[in-house]
Amino acid sequence: MKNNKQIVEIAENWLTFALDDYKIVDKLISDGETFYRTICFHSQQYVEKILKGILEHIGSIPPKTHDIQILARLVDQKGFKVPLTKEEMVFLKSVYIESRYPPDVGLLPKGEPDMHDAEYAYKIIKKIKKWITTDNDNRDNDNVDNEHKKDENS
Image (tube, rainbow, N blue to C red; front, side, top):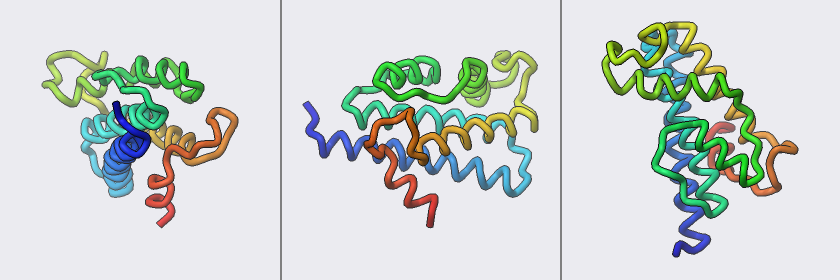
């Protein structure tokens, strides 16, 4: 069984990796790059890692899934209201697979992600970033993302 220090270290690792995904997306968007599949993939990864980090922080072992809906439901059950719509979660699920396999697998209904999809993914991760870095009624008083806040403010 993991002790509290180990749980916090694991949660911090998830959040550190998530921050890398956020920075990649932010940089690509800021630079006007057209790597839409990469932007969408790293957006999905950011949200997945944030949710898994929250689960680790509260002592739950996250399941081995990339499904944002499943992870969000588990986080919600632990008292944290994830501010994503079903549409946003379904979108993130579709771009995860889309970016890992050739487009002919048919993951997004219309094929390869485009600029609109990349902008939508970016909007979603900014929403999650705001959620985890803002004290609000949807979280308890524990700050599950101190390192994330420090990195973003520096």
